[in-house]
Length: 80
Image (cartoon, rainbow, N blue to C red):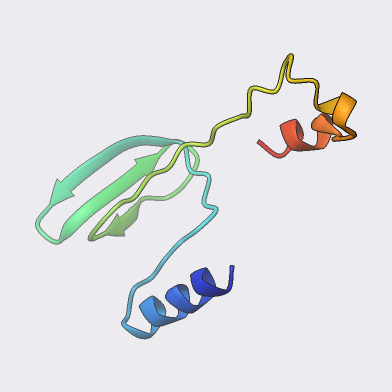
């Protein structure tokens, strides 16, 4: 995480506003003269130059026998 934190600080020093963990259900991304406008049902619109979206994934652990190896797979599957 150290490199990620350093990168975040560098970008912020350059004037980049990064908004992590927003969890905004996006309904629409519109282009307008000054950039992009992201809007959703539950939040006010966010205006940006660039939008990067990521989706989460859940591990498929069924049938791997992790319990036999002493690994508590319930903690892993809850984090997804």
